[in-house]
Amino acid sequence: MASTETAVRRTPRQLLAAIVGVVFLLVGVLGFIPGVTTNYDMLTGAGHHSGALLLGIFTVSILHNIVHLAFGVAGLALARTPGGAKAFLVGGGVIYLVLWLYGLLIDQDSAANFVPVNTADNWLHFGLGVGMIALGLIPLGATRGPIADSR
Image: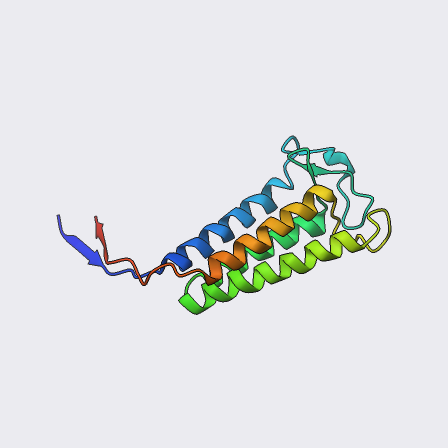
């Protein structure tokens, strides 16, 4: 049996960006699964009338789930390079902090709540924003060494 050694160099930040991307993909998919999303029959395309709750806590709509899926795809795509991983984490974090502020400022029962968000979403968005920016900016080391791929 021949052994092939492939050098794969990924920074810790690239790995973290990929993990964050996978989590966003998972959340986006779970938002479409009845049972994981309660009140699934109340899932709307967009707007504050959606009564669907991911994990029984976070308001979701079809648009909200698609945003999670898009963030996941972006995370995986950008995690392919160190600069892309940093841009995804910092840029995504800024977007989530803006969404947090938006959620605090709008009337949740108005048409302005088109995503939609509730109080639990707002504080999750705050945590995501701060966490993603921190992961994008804190020093994490250079690279991991080669990984042997035995077949």
